[in-house]
Each structure stands twice: as C-alpha cells, then as structure tokens.
Image (cartoon, rainbow, N blue to C red; front, top):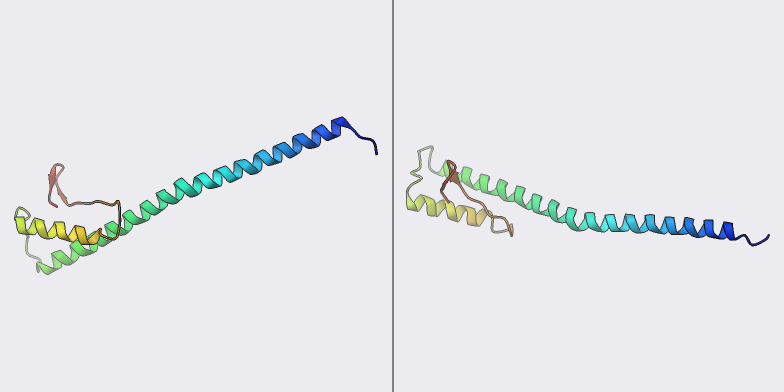
Length: 107
C-alpha cells in the first residue's frame, strides 16, 4: 500500500472535525450545567419560598378566625414580616413581601 498525501490530509481533516465536534459538545454541556443548573436551582428555591410563604399566610388568616385584620396596625405588619422571615429563611437570595395595591408594601 502506497503512501498517499491526499488520504493522509483527508484523515487529518476528518480527525480535526471530530475533535471540534467533541469539544463543542463538551463546551455546551458545561455551559448548560453552569447557567442552566443555577437558573433551575433559583427557580426551585423561589417556588418553594412562595409555597412556604403562602402556607404560612393561610395559617395566619385562619388564626384570625375569619375576622378582617387591620393591615395598618403595626403589630400585624410586624407579624407578617416575621412570617416572611421564617418562611424564606431556608431560601438564600430569595426575598419577598406582601403588597396592597401597586405602591403600598405591607411587609
């Protein structure tokens, strides 16, 4: 079998193409793991924080025996703030609040 430069160069180009594809898949995989995992983790933490805050707020409302709670009362606002602090304590980088209307923060 004779040495063919054309065959050797074609094999080299094929090898380079395969290596580029492999590196591309690895880079995409690393990117998706880094950014995608962080986004998924943040989204799950946010969902869990919201669920926990809603569950605790429902308990707070049931504890008031269906009576209207005076939202302007400083003690109620302090209780709601404590409720959120406890509900979101296990979810770092997640903050929340209760809002009445567009510009009025309750807790």
